[in-house]
Amino acid sequence: MKYTENNKPLVCMMTQSTCYKGTRKMKVLGVLWHSTGANNPNLKRYVQPDDNAPDRAGMLALLGTNGNKNDWNHIDRDAGLNCWVGKLADGTVATVQTMPWDYRPWGCGSGRKGSCNDHWIQFEICEDDLTDRGYFEKAYREACEITAYLCKLYGIDPNGTVSYNGMQVPTILCHADSHRYGLGSNHGDVLHWFLKFGKNMDTVRADVAALIEGTGTDTTEPAPAPAETAPAEKLSSGYYRVRKAWSDSKSQIGAYRILANAKNAADAHPGYSVYDPDGTAVYTAAVGESSPKEPAAVPFLVQVQIYDLNIRTGPGTDHPTIGRYTGKGTFTIVKTATGLGATLWGKLKSGAGWISLDFCERL
Image (cartoon, rainbow, N blue to C red; front, side, top):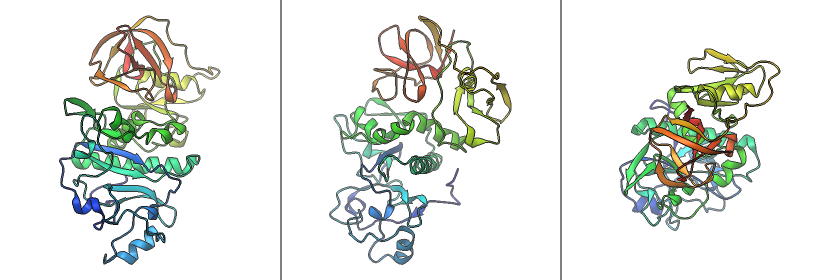
């Protein structure tokens, strides 16, 4: 992890802002991601030190100066976040904390069932024109790093849920998620950006968890390849990683909780191997095998390995959840389809919706 108690993010408390002056403390339950929706990746556009801050000159040297004076550290800006992710003056992508972590942000607004503002630390990622993969990967990695730090700081399970206003709500959300749960205003961030580069909030949670576990050296790699629905395999306590070599993290194709899924991804890339969470090779794809195995014919049975597997209205994380989980158990899959990141999804026989087969064993 990049950030620890001995290596905290930069701090530029924007005490002149309306939010800082008018908010209150909150009990922290999770972390919520935003992106700005404007083509300006520079932190100086939004973050500036107080007019009389003792370290003002030093902070301006780091951030750069907003000559238009339209940053968010003003009384007339009716919004506020706990931190920001974007470019410093030298082009380095970094996080700057702008309010105490337990100060209630004015970020996602309210929905029909309340607001995530009440309990979720929130930050903005400064967008560019949404075409630069290099900047996206750096910003995404930085956002995962600060989220992992906050999860460690507050004992948050990145793959967990919390009970809030009669619902089970994921601890890590984006603005679009908050709206779907009725806990935020109608915005599409961050998915309008992330999906362009094969990322979504499921990959965010997995990558944050990997950082906390100490295995997340490569969170900006492509999304996992198709899931395997044939031989049953057990879930790993960490992640199986598919690479040319364990030391070559840049070659990684994906990280998988089920060994069979990792083997399937390796089979699509001859010469690649599957490594367990300790870095031991447990499988190597045969040379000459060039495509993933076809999914088994439907219907078939699967064993769900986790309590909180979302049921969605369609095959992919771009489809909303129905507000319920499968729980652990055996289910019949009557149809399969490939969703975002080439993940395989299965339609439940009950008609309730679709589930990711990456968290299932085929029986």
